[in-house]
Length: 626
Image (cartoon, rainbow, N blue to C red; front, side, top):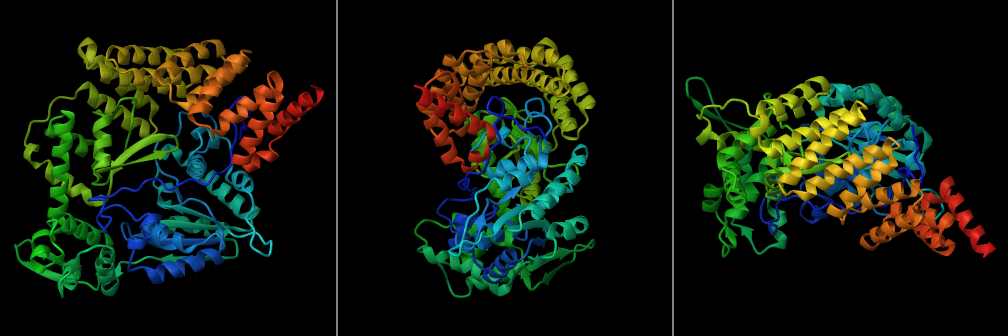
């Protein structure tokens, strides 16, 4: 794989990243998490899984491979993040952030060529504070070998713990990405063989375990184990209901929590004759428990301290709680952003519920997500209808949980009888995006082109701008630089007529990076300068601009741009490295030493980088000569 240096995208090594802020369904004061999974910071309210957490911790520390499996929604992620991870101290092991290898588009292929999207996503998750291009061209073993060894008090290397959550995504991804699967698993095997201290945990849905079996022996070597995660038993469910209230002023009246658990264990069924019956199980669905408890908590009037049977009867219905939540949220977002409620409901169903009744994903475009303004999607994310993830360089939205699918469908009922209008340019563009997600570039190009032709001059300028940018991306993937540049230029002109200067800047930055990758540095400089004027706070863009300045021999201009970038982000390693390299050969060697040493302090593995070593040597030689 290609390894880029200081004037390209420098390879990097992990800085421990802080936990991203969690998503909550209800009020922040609620002791329950609702539909989202528990994060590490939620450990103080994560109950009912003590035994499983202790057992999984012990198995992870003592095996080269641990497979944690269970049905969808059973709580594998919560157990891992809030149960197992908090029980591992710095004296036990060197623990990397829990990561995923999610579906979705990778960082633009024209900018980051020749990368495996799975390993790219994994390494990006381990180095969240770095630019997404950092992980391009690196193998998993190379990345992990670059981490400093952490020793115990006897100078013995501690285990290096790596967890990959939702591993089923490797086997359910888009068809055109399957070619990368075997190579990614080979990288994991290579890492396991190269680092005896590595301990790999894979969390996977139970129905995908069979697909993992062919790789189990090579990934686990001679030490592997499996750990099943089941539903909550009655006593564990009672703990999950009652113990989180210990940090609040509220409490359950005698028998109420037990009644709540009994309700969750009971399922009402009806046959074709309309006869209704009940079935009672010994277990409770964790998701159902959290939804009911969150809804109950939110509905209680502020003065209430004792939670009674009446409160449970009025506010403890799962389906009603979810439906009311969705309806209230859509109404609020619709009113705030001036988008009709029917349009929001139609968009949610069209984009986020597939024909198979599963969750769909939508990526965030320059100004819209699936035809809806990004501001609406972000508002629904803030209110926990949607969740957003940065997947290999792109932002993708999806419903927060499978349990929202039916409420979203029910919430749309008032408008379900409306006549479906003829396809609009926006619908053609959404279809094109779906074709691209399926790996069919020709079909994607066809529908995106029809979006423009169908709308003609009367088309919504924003939809046409998005379509032009989309076609520019397709042209770039095919290596048609002139066509890509023309499409992006049209998009920028349309966004400019809308007064959306941020969108214009993003398009210009994309053009500049494409031109830079093609070696057309003078043209790239024009585009990147224009983009920087519109996006003054984009540090990564400033570093790219400085890199192009350096390539055309304008070192003082590059230093000025980098100085501005480091004013915004003093600890940006890419900016420090590039400024240090320029100063070492064309500027002040003392400043070069300071920048390069700061970069090495922030990223210790840079001490083994040949280019960094050469720059340090050049700076010291010039300093001695002076």
